[in-house]
Image (cartoon, rainbow, N blue to C red):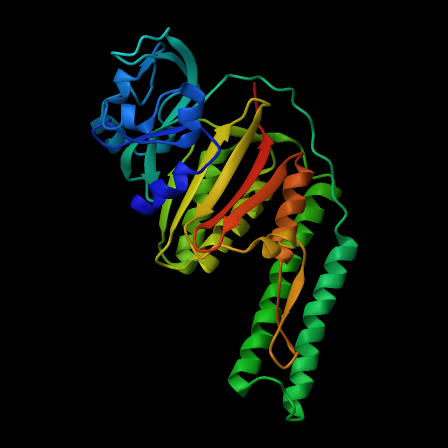
Length: 352
């Protein structure tokens, strides 16, 4: 939990996190900036002593914690938006109106460990349809590149002049390139099918349900990880379920692979002033240097000391970027060596 709190402290969304006793254990920097209160002032206070709920209808602040823990679907508890005001005893300040989305904090199995609140204004954005993306040429070039690596490596091994240290290493490289080619084809053709063949209709997509489904699938393939989910309840984006699954699967899987088994991963979201929902996938792994970030969404090769190409990466993130932009959103990344990486993307909030 300590590693997760360190990650959440840095996200650009005003976030408050409590434990099972409803006492504040995190009041991040964005929340301090928005409210004027400091972490030192509110730490270990009951959340109800700071945020006073005006609606009280299915709000996790007001709900009994035992009922939330016993709920079959804890992430679906409560309303999507609540209103109230900020007020702290002993502070000479006018009551501060606030909107917030509150949800139980649960792991991928649904076990509740506290409450998260995302502070925000209530905005009703206009609904606009996303634009399609052309992928045919890109896919053909990428698959041809992967298959060229396979053919060249196989020929080199057959004639005994391979750059690999062992036959096993060469065969592993061939297998990796074949699997990458299959993944690129599957995801790319799915994008084409959805966007270019008339199957895409902007629709309401349940963000919480999609995130949990993707993480359950990834943990079934890669093993259980320390993943914390903190999302606004009843949060919906305007888009397509298949594209959202592609985006989340690539970003969460990227964190699983590159951060390592011992690292923590946090998936959070917040509704911004412009009516876009920003989703953050953060880890506290080894991080990346600035020069790596500049070409992160472009396919690039890595060479061994002898000059032979040993791996090819970036296509998954490039497809992720194209999927986000096809839905009218944006994607960005922040990272520091030894301090972790945070991928973020924004999609239009669905409003009835």
